[in-house]
Image 1 (cartoon, rainbow, N blue to C red):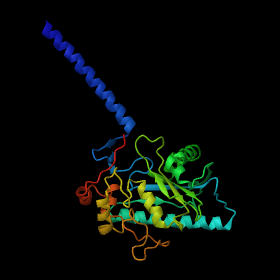
Image 2 (cartoon, helix red, strand yellow):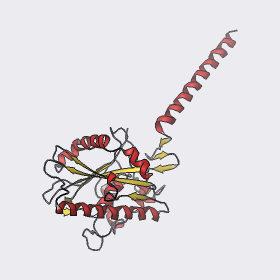
Image 3 (tube, one colour):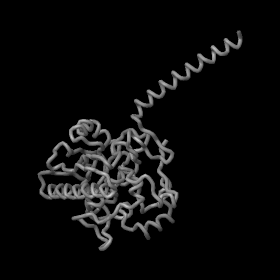
Image 4 (cartoon, one colour):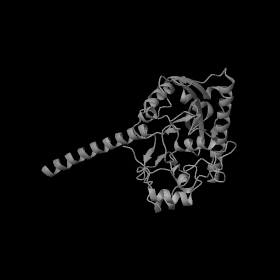
Length: 307
């Protein structure tokens, strides 16, 4: 009798556990949309395997580039001013070159990508916002204050899901342009997504001029690659285990990688008509174009996992 009762109780417990597991599986299935975090920090969503997340995910797909021209306390964009109109036209030109370049990079790895960058003819890809801050203050960039303002504007003013549906896009990158001049002390940068951020928007803060030079198409492409998971190769980064020794290796063997330099290898200067930099094995690995990299294994490079 006691053994039968024990068996009955055990059966009830097993049924209860099975039901709980089933509900947990359904919850995770719905909430995570088939997304799995691998031990190396990479992500899988459906049949895709890539290393970025947020609004820019798998570079082998269709990426919509939304352009936002931002005024701050010191700078503004005036479409009635001939000089600003010319600068906007140059931004369109450089953005187009960058998008075409990235399509070619993906094709080199036997995959396909489409970057939709034309805000001149597609007016719903061009926006104008104002910020009550000094965007050219590097401390403001570093503090994240500009992120909160940009995210709020995007959520209120841009129907991202409708744009993705209209253009049949898989990914979205927001390019936020600031009309800086040669006195600008801040540096173009990217707010790329990680787990736990309050918004999934991948934003590139692109100054018209930094380092006293007008930013060239390679800078656009460099920053766009950040949104897909590519790290800088010109500075140490413990999250990726980019050490001083590895940087020496990069400078010797991968010296034309676009994540290391945006200058032309021959002249050492920016080029404004083309991008002559390469996407090396390491950078291709980080953006998911390669499943593995001998160089990454040799140097014990890592993909950060954010808790």
